[in-house]
Image (cartoon, rainbow, N blue to C red; front, side):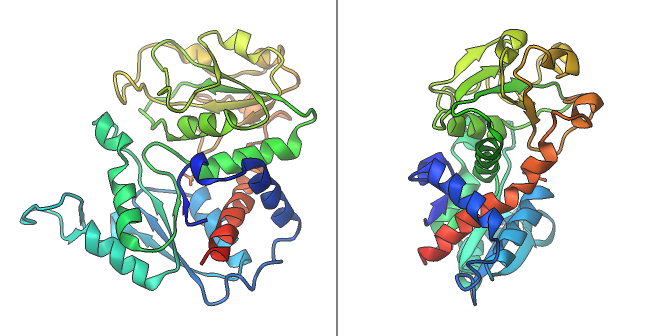
Length: 315
Ligand code: CP
């Protein structure tokens, strides 16, 4: 594997999830693969889980890891070609990415959307330029439109904990006070549409995701109807795709509660984290028996390790 930016970079998602679960059983079995190899992690935005789990995965594989918080510690990046750089930008992405590629064998990049210009965000300008100019394999640590390491960890978690061959999985929108990217729900939808699950998306009117990511999903505005007989519930806020990046008024009653869980098949509740308590998800759910959010975050290590292992094997 030379690139991990979406579900389309994976030949067999079930095999990759199975490999992650094998690595969970035997984390240090492939330390020889990473000997004298270096992973560079470039963050243009904050992170707890992605940063730590991907480092841990690389260490388990015997790799060295270097982290650059580019937004705080790097030079201000210029993205446009042919410009006179007489403003605030100091270094062009052409040189920055190419130089990073001289120091490491694999690069991970995190670059969130601006949520101002939909075309710019959905063209993945920063991310694609890193891929174009760095000259080494690239793994997405979350881009403007997708979070594939999270989605793989989510598939690993569902595969690990399901008690029937084809569980019902529901992605349900949750309230938030800030406009959040569509990357996690886009990506989760894209992966679930290819997984062995019955997949439903529930959201208030106006929060439709791009159909590029939801082909094959059942989509409803009725949360109670969606939750009926659910085996897994994935809770996530996202801002509107149209009008882009906006929060629409109302919908506070979409927060999941134990009362709403009564119609489910004893559903397990997932969230990518970080989560705002009693806004996106209630204390009673997060502290109760149905929540698997910490277990899910733990599986981020094995998802990242499976991807890095396949990249190391292709070097
Ligand atoms: N879920 C997730 O990606 O968490 P971080 O933003 O903390 O990495």
